[in-house]
Image (cartoon, rainbow, N blue to C red; front, side):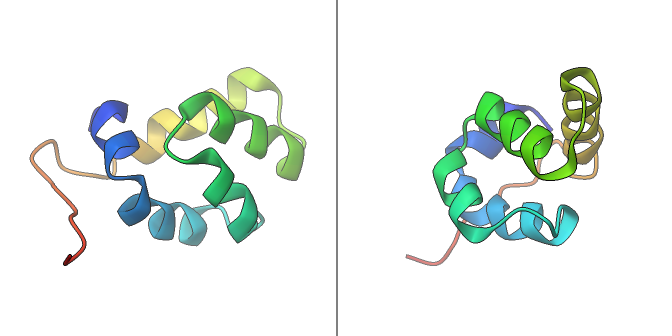
Length: 75
């Protein structure tokens, strides 16, 4: 899945991010607000990862979602 879709629907995907990276706080995930660079920063901070490894983890996480998946919260 492309990051743009995840970024746009971050409120829906941040729950999944929390399940995937349990060390990230709710405050960190709220602050990320769909910004991939901020997620990388948070992974580096919380897990002590080098930037390239944090980037790779995000890329791998994105592949767990189908390309056509749209996760919209009921409004």
